Image (cartoon, rainbow, N blue to C red):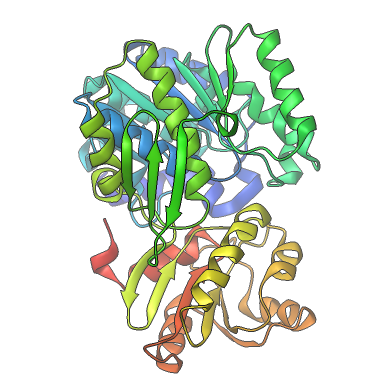
Length: 435
């Protein structure tokens, strides 16, 4: 099989969450352990940093990887889902895995695939671990797929664990309350391995994490209670200038209000890594913050793809993400004449709760991404009407985006959001924005 045929084979025989949703979820680590043993436990050959959380884990993972890379460490980065190309999920020093390695790995393990029927994510994780060993990385930054306790990435023994934040997500799989979800995320806390907890507004959750860390004899650091970040100022374009205790002034190209909390978490992580002997250069931190998108291929986090009218893509897809996005939207509205929102979402998300949050003083272009999980545009129009959201439905993201552009003045603002898959379809319309 060539690369395209190999991917098609994987999608056919291994259920992929980004294609079919909850039906692809296979809890338990037994298949991952078996596949890991077949590959001779590659993740034991390098140091791992394990990252879980509801929102922000992608930005945190990319920033940490960029800093390590800029400091001279050969660094692997494993994230999901991909936006445009599957190979985005697995990178070494910012470069995606080669197509041929994907083909060879699947061919080498095809008997196991046919016999044990692992999920798409289980196979992808094993592929990432194997590729990082092949490339002789020193560090690998590993993002969980879903939850943590039963996530297939949880076979690793990291040098540092990070849990960015907790809000309601995947409630049909992780539990319908914050404590249940926190319990799943806390599953990545390992004995005697320090753990950093990002933004948490609930005292009950803080106490819960302290108890879990105590049970594992793990040092726990609440990033928001540390003085690593002295000042933070958002710029007109949505980027940030941070004043840090350890690295001085940091210009960060990542946009959106959520990045303040993400950076607090990253600075805490760098402090732990540095104190344990990892070389982290001040110049490297400055370079990584300023160039993280180009260095790591990060896309879809309040990413500006056009200036007149200003068009931003953001993969926010749950209520927690939208609560932050709304504050950013209000910030943009003060600098633009009108707001247009191209919105689509997966049918297994909390559609009502998210649409309840959406601003009523915007023009909506309800659409559906080119994946089976997408909620229909007509359904979104009807739900939007119930919440006072005025707009039309479009069968494709392309039609929705082009109509929004045709209706917008140069002084207007267009947000494309609701799903990583909507952003993926949209970015193909702006090829210069694909990293």
